[in-house]
Every structure is written in structure tokens, then in C-alpha cells.
Image (cartoon, rainbow, N blue to C red; front, side, top):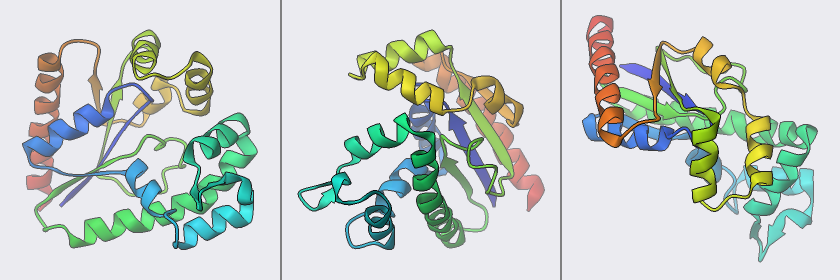
Length: 199
């Protein structure tokens, strides 16, 4: 089994790359999705967030995710508090997915905050999806985000240079879908070879 990290800044296109890997045969999980699941109402994560941040982060009995995001992206100390609650739970949820996968699988975890999580995971291979800040900002504006929201998130994340420094493979995503798929397929061949040699 090969356990792979797929990282990249907001707007880099890592979700698109993740779908391409899934089509090629990888088991792809998304840390953002796991992060939502570990704080659903009724979970320990949910209770800990309410205990830490108070009822102001609730809306109709559920977490007001948009409000919580605004809160933590404005305040690094609050963001760290949230990450201390969610990151261990996300790691545990991912470990269960790895345990349940077949021994010859390639398991890919889409994990935007790989650099920020202080490498608390053991990965056999790290892939970084990179795009210029101008391209990423344009994509995020098209998604409906304001410049203030975009800047808050960009400032909260590591730079492409930091992500590329820990990467075994770098996928550039500034061209067409066909160009992107060609890059993904090259990396997929490498992953399959690495997995074969590992077993």
C-alpha cells in the first residue's frame, strides 16, 4: 500500500486533481470532508467546539461553519484552538480509512494544511498542486469569494514554495484540463511503480 498526501493552496485545483486520481483508481479522501464529519452535531468534536467558542458559533442547533471560519481566519490563536480540537480527530478518521483499504491500494489524502499540521502524518509520497497567486485569486473570485475572504485564507496558509519544499512531485495547474490530466497521469505512473517496488 502507498499512502500519499495531495496538498495545495486554496484555489490551486487540488480537488480537481483528486478526482482525476480517483478516476485512475486511487482511493481518495478529503481532509476537509473529514473535518466536517468529526464536528457534526452529536460528536465529541462538536461538544469541544461549543465548550471552546461558546453558543455564538451555533445556528439552529448546528455549527455555523461560515461564522466559525470568519472567526478563526481573523484570529490565529482561535484558529490554533480549533485545529487542536479537529486535527487529532481527522488523523484518526484517516487512519481508519487506511486500515480498511486493500494491501495493494494507493490511498490519497487531500490535505490542504499539510505544512501547517507539522507533518503529523506518515506519507510515502507528497504531491503539491501549484498555481500562481493571480490564477488562484481569479478562480476564488469566480467561486464567489470576496477579496477580504481570499486574503485572509491566503495569509493563513503556507506559501507554494513551502509546500513545494516538502513535495516529492509537483503538479502545475495553470493550463487546460487536458494538460492537467497529462501531468496527473505521469505522477500516477510514478505512484504505481513506487507501490509495486514497496510491496
